Length: 105
Image (tube, rainbow, N blue to C red; front, side):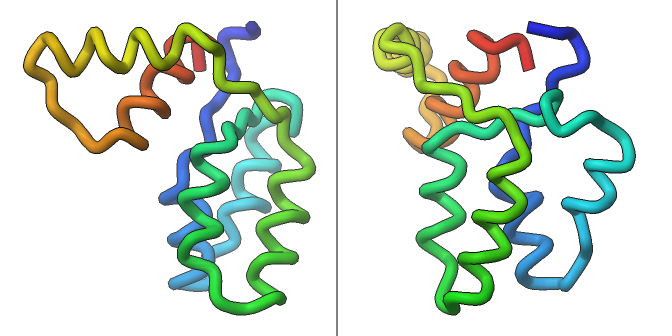
């Protein structure tokens, strides 16, 4: 994993959809698309908020430029370990955090 890898979190997509900010263009002007990483849980989080086919197409277009990182099997055990340490967070946030750690993003 290159040190400049960047996890593109759901807030980037959601802000784009709500405020019309072109976060995709901004990210692509700063990073190579292969430096941008997305996980299934992030995409699912955004898809749950999408109501129009146009917005879905925009998400698909932007996310197709990025590197898709699979969720490692170890994620689920690491999520449980974080939870047992008293760090209680929403499941999606824990999964995103453990995936980012695994990918060094």
